[in-house]
Length: 171
Image 1 (tube, rainbow, N blue to C red):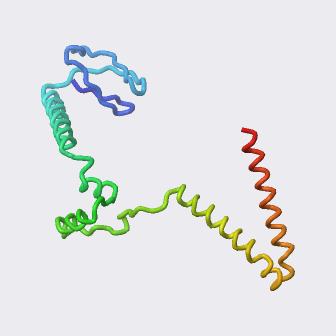
Image 2 (cartoon, helix red, strand yellow; image 1 turned 90 degrees about the vertical axis):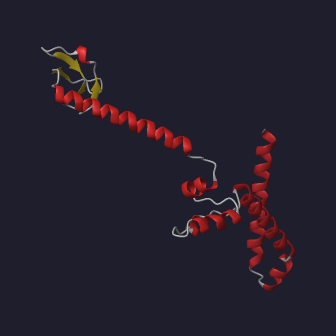
Image 3 (cartoon, rainbow, N blue to C red; image 1 turned 135 degrees about the horizontal axis):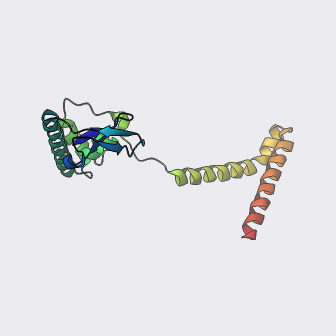
């Protein structure tokens, strides 16, 4: 028998023999509401059986559909994540789905990672200071007022260098 809570509308499956003709006091395990449940008529019993059978059918069809999906296939990866594995496969997929338009903005191409950007930044900074050091005298001769700023920049870099070395020596 299928009973429904009056308060939260949650449905529960109860054996037919558990509820007698005089009714039985039941309590919702979800919200704690208590009420008296009475047995249902024969028509309602057939309806509940049909609902249960539909649920069983839905469960079996879902499990069958899930088993057929190959999560590592290129088509699944393309549909789910928008990633393409091989250029030849891209052309084949485009031919297969002529009516479907492949969104080129979803195609992810390999790019720099975090550490590649970090290495690039370090190389850029070191080369900047190398070029600045080589052209320091030339810049000062062209712009005499820039000598103070260049010296100050090198002083700040030297202070940062000593701080990092002291931190590394502590460990």
